Length: 226
Image (tube, rainbow, N blue to C red; front, side, top):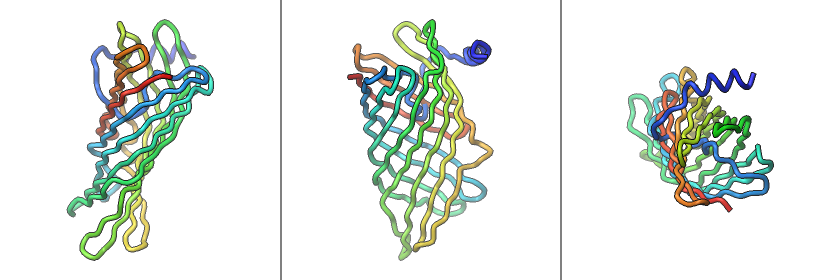
């Protein structure tokens, strides 16, 4: 089963660099090892269900990953982020940056002959400052959930990876105490993830990730292993 799955995934392995949403890539810390990094994550466009419009978000994080086992890592992040939500037929609502955080895990399902398969789960929650439109107060929360399936291959000193992810974004909107939840467009919940790890030193590397189809996003981080 693993061999058949690996053959299917390898058919998609690409040769050039690209950019993507933050699945953290396929570089996991070993048991009792820490990784730390700084990440910028931009969601350029994510459509919401029905007539709820679309949203954008810019987020900055401090990243920490810890190896529970050589095949399992816990991923944590904390920082700040904003939300820009554009309702259908109305002006964009701009929520200034406030607290943002996230957590997740990655599992190394395969690691042999410079090829890895990584299964992951990540969740991000963004809590920007409220804003006023006229005399009406608006509050918002963005919840971003994803499950990812990535495969990577080492090419010279670079690591390129490609995979699929299921994702859902919830836009929780409160107007004068009345709370409503709008989900992302469920017809576009499967996306393509592609990325690249670029080594700078033996302990430092840059990660670039990109995403298409379910949303359009870009992540860039610089990382250090302890």
